[in-house]
Structures are given as structure tokens and as C-alpha cells.
Image 1 (cartoon, helix red, strand yellow):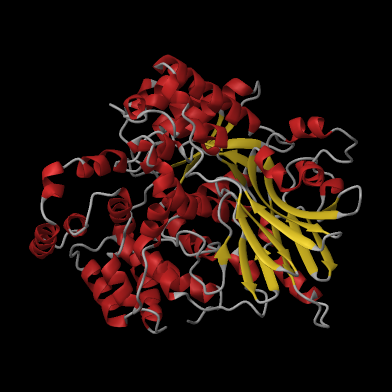
Image 2 (cartoon, helix red, strand yellow):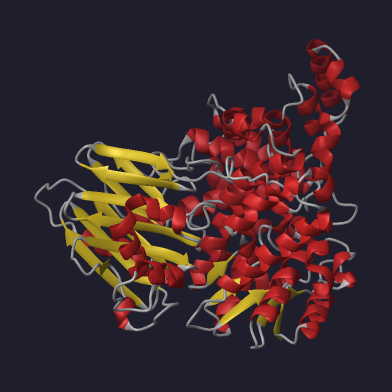
Length: 620
């Protein structure tokens, strides 16, 4: 796990070495173990290293292949690199997966991407063809941002690194801002800044004198197999256990200390249980505990720790401690987000304990129908009498309902009633909204296209044949998970130079589980198919416990200890001219008075936006 950056710039008489060094400095937190540069106009590459495999200097980057034709900067892990090395044959000079990527690209070209099992973002410079090739892993676990204008192209693991280049603009994109207020992040390839995009999951880019060519090599919308549809229930469960066991075992490859996040929920328990089966060494586990019993899950984490004999590290988090660390957590934010402080805290203490790699249970809810939306969305779609009503009648009901109550639930019900059909791309977008879309684009003062609806409508033809629950899984993965949860996991863990691996998002697991019929997956208790697949590995106390999640009493703090902090940033944002100040101040005052429908998230989004803009020198 590392940080990569660079640019392709036609010769202009300037050496650009200082620009390259500025990019390196901006991402040093991602790789404290080494740094390297390549300035070979028109290409300039830089790398900071978090050494995981072959920690010797032989693994430093940029790395060149034995022929001298290719050079690479790379961030991530290829878990099957040992198998690929055997298949490729020949002599290798290091024990790294980096060298295997170079050899695979030299042998198979871009076809090598289909052979990789892992999380990755890399750039390869081909001296012979004068071509720069970039690629990102199938599930979008590792980020890769880029700026392209005219003949220039720049890329980096983080936005703040791109902002070190004087030709990259520092201006808010109004469409991106509207999406952020609606969804607490920006979906798709767009970001909140003009001219900065994110390379899509499972995509690669070629840069040459001919321009930029972007090509997908894998898509979560098209990956599902029908294998499970032809298997009996017992065989499906056996297959899932086998796939998950292999996914976890692959992610134990490391030459440095390795641990796991353990909340005591089903997903993290599954990962720890499979880790314990795959290794004869005790696993280091980490969890956050609270003095407030309403938020504390430590008893379940301790139960799992005892069952699997882990070296457990509970992190007792007191409110004053979290509040004191909040400015540092926000400073670590590379792209504004409504979430992620929890990831910052647990990553900080995990890294402080000497752990460089941690496994996470992220992805279990998405694949095994763990969120409420998996019950709620089909229930709405199946209200046949409702959808038989003429559209004008439903629209009238929606407007009337909104006038009766201003609760958040009533607002969302009103939006659903005003949809033209029960198509998922319409209903799904309502579930994930924070600010209502109409309010968001009025606050920003722009016309706006809903990125969630556009994406799901565009890809609907690829998922029409899939089970209904799998369609929701794909919607969750392609929007909320990839653009919020995975991005937050990367930016807040790498702020402490901690690599986080996510076995549930092994592409072999994903493509099989997405093909499982609904009657096998629809749970009578949380994530029943996963629990039954793993048998007695998950204690019943964990399975049937109340689902709590990692939550803090934000609303209470924002009306108390955090009020001055938030109020200052609300006032500062209202003066920036990017949102309607009267509306923003009204929301703040009504939230303080406890009026509906305002929740802490409605306040937190503008607060973190302003702080992010201030930290990154973005004025408008």
C-alpha cells in the first residue's frame, strides 16, 4: 500500500522537478518507508512506499522491468502474485508483487488485469511506445484521481496531491456540490472539484500523443454468474464458505504485522473466524468501546476474541478525547464526506499498536442483504394498488403528504409518491438522500442531473435478469459503498499509513453471491445466508444481537460541546458564496431548536465541506 502520482506533459522548457516533489510531499503520510521519482519527459512519476511485501530497498519504486522498457508506480496488493510468478516463469529479483505486475504487463499487455486478484491502482510508462497506462481494481478499493486538459494529464492517489500542480484548478463544481449535499459524497467519476475526476472501478486509461483513451475491463453490473441458480441450497452455502475462506487466506499474505477490525458484528466476526482458521498465529483484533452503554459493543467483540483466542485491543473512546481529535481527523479528509471519523479513530490506534495491515468486514451488508433497504425497497415496489394509481393522482398525494408533515420520513415518502414508476433507479435514490434534491439544487443555484438515477438507468439492461436483492446489492456497491465507504476507508486509514483489506469484496465472492436466488438470500434474521454458510463459526449471541453500528451522539454534541466549532464553520461557509446563506442559517437555527426534519447530518455536511475547503485552500 502506497501513494502514487505523476503527470504526462509535452515538453515546455520547464524541468517540473519542484512540482513532482510537491506532489510527493503532499502524500508522504501514505508511505513513510520510502520515496522515489522518475522525471523522463514527457512523463514524471513519484511514489511513497508503505512496505508490506519484501520490505528491503529492492522493492522501492518507481520500479523498472528487466528489459528497461517499462517503469511502474503502484498502490495496492495483488494477492495471487505468487501463482502468477510461477506461471510467468523466469527470474525475479525481488519478493514484491510490483515486479510481478511489470512482468505480467510485459507478457500479456492489458489482458493481465483480468488475471489479478487484488486491490490496485498503478501507472506504467512504456518507453518504446511512449505510452502511459493507468488502471484501477475491479471493486474500486484503491482510489485514482486524474486531471486531463488538452495535451496534459495528471494523476494521484489523493486529490490534495493533484492540487499541488499549478495548472489544476481549485474550484468547486456545482453539480458535484449538489450531489454532496444530497448523498454526503459525489458518485461516479465526478468529484466535488472542477476538472478532477476519479478513474472508475475496473477501468484503465492510455495516455499518448494521440490523447486519452478510457476503457473498462470489468463491471460489477455485468459480473454476476448463474452458477448458484443451478445448485441446491447446501451446495450454495458450501461454495460461499469456500470462497470466503480463500478470500481471507489470500489477504493474510504479508511480511509485516497484520490484524483485524472487530466490532463484534456478524461481518467482522466472520473475517476474524476465517483468519483464525487460516493461520496458527493469534490474530490481533481492535475494537472501539464506549462508557455509554447505548453505543458500546465491546461485550460481543470480547466474546469473539475469547472464542478465537485473539490478542484483543479494546479502544476506550471518551467524548472529550474524540472531540479533541476531530480537527486532525478532518485534516486527514481528502474528499469531503459525511462519514469516516470512526475509521480515522480505529485506524490510528491500530497503527499505533505496530500493525501495518488490517482486515475489515466491509462489504458483508451489501452482499448478504444486511441493510434495511433490502426489505424496504421491495416492499414499496410491491404495493401494486399504489402504482396502479394514475401518476397525477400520486403526485397530488405526494404534495399533500409533504404538507401534512415535515418529518424526514414524510419527505421521502412524498418523493416516492411523485415518482413516475416503481423502477429501482427512482426509488433507490430516495433512500440515500440527506438534503432533498430539490432543496439541494436550490441551495446551490444550479440545474442538476441526479448521478445515482443516471447510473442505475444506464446500467439497468445489464441487471434486469438478476434476482431483486442482487439488484439492490449492485446499487449499493456502485454508489454508496464505492464512493463513500471505500473512499473513506482508504483516506482515513492511509492517514496513518495503515493498509485495510476487504475480503468480502474479493471479485470471486462478489460474482457468485450476486447470482444467488432471492429465496436463498432473503433473511428471516440478519445475513442468514452468510451465517448458515459459515456454520458454527459465528456465535449465536453475535447473530441475534441488536444491530448498533459505529455511531456517536453527534446531535447531542452539536448542540453542546461541538456547537461553537460547527457554528463558526456554518457562518464561514455562508460567506463563501457557494450555497444560499439564508437557507443554510435557517437549517442551523432550526436544528438547534430541535425542529424536524433536520438531523445532525444536515449540519455535518456543510461543516466538513467548509473545513475541507479551508484546509485545501479552496475559496469558491
